[in-house]
Image 1: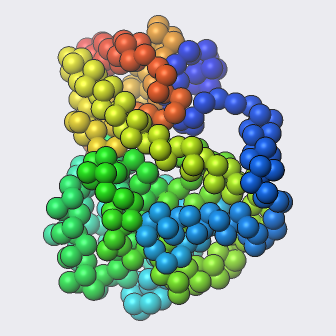
Image 2: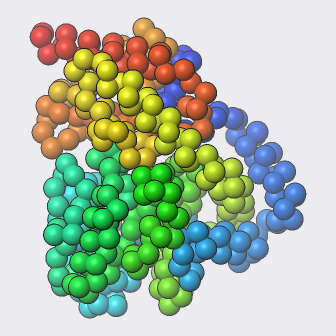
Length: 365
């Protein structure tokens, strides 16, 4: 039985996508209804009203003069790094060892943009001010850090990072793919307050927001105009963005107000999981609507245990099991989105308990 077949047989599904299931036809009809209600048309080449509305909305939310829609985050962040290299005359960018640019983009910053990276900080913790180094084109900081279970620097440390970057004259770029869940951890400060001190911010629309596709870069006006030029050069001047862009507008309205509930539910679930003997939740408590459950085994053993738990409980816990620094340690990524708000936690706890028992039995053998 394949993973997809087993997942479809489960009554609880915590894997991506995190929003309620709907067919492609249902999704398109919902988008069409929204477009008709809001007077949005089938625009061409990113030149219509829906793109203008979305870019203005993101600029306002993030607190920057401008924003630019991109079809993918990989394209957006590569362009950002390139622009800072052009501005500073430096080819080196600063990345955390778990950065998306390093682990999930096949070295695009080097192969596409001709940049090199210096890894700073430690795999197992968020970046701190002392990790920053001088003479770099930019430092790219992920808030929150996915491969640390959504961990964030506390407010004082984030302030120190911003101040240290300014002292070193190193532009800060935020990989804010999952910024939407950060406000509760930062005392409900606005996204603009969190983003202050960053020269630019990237946000994703298809993860917790759940839009069809897309991302945005926000920054100063000159930066964004240059980013539009590079978007065109890289083939990102999408002919017909109208399904994805209006979808993003409608879902920002729906899901941003729900983020505190996602974060609160994540904290409650983490507290329940932490009562299981041998289970390690990181961070504890969670900082955003994500956490990791760490296992003392390799990723393949953990996936087999996940499958056994799914067969016994009807709970599909995750799609991603990440290898950590050592081959005998891995982490299961759990994210709470709109679909998971309706789930009872006890079956999830039961499934994680079975995973723990299965992994222990495999280690004995």
